Length: 142
Image 1 (cartoon, rainbow, N blue to C red):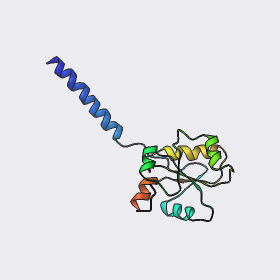
Image 2: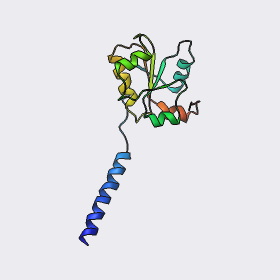
Image 3: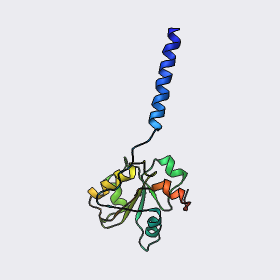
Image 4: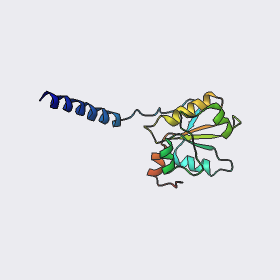
């Protein structure tokens, strides 16, 4: 009987931990200082402009591989370095657009904040990200 109780308790703890991990993730901040917040419609305008921004997808590689905005470069926030960003956009006036999974994803806000700290002056942040893009049935690349 004692062995059964010892097995049930860890299973309950594991189930609760799994539930808690998938419960509400924190919301991304409403703004990122120095970055311009944009909607899906504004992203469309930006990427169809004569000189579109560099699109940086801050999601995990497997998420990016399943689908992303056309022309986006995969750059997980933990992989972003000043040198890697400079290879994509050497000039600090080059426009950058960061996105990730949506309002409950902090990766793109972290990346946008870092780009601003490194002196980039045209930083766009698509807070709604992948969720907003796909909810609006906008085109995706694979």
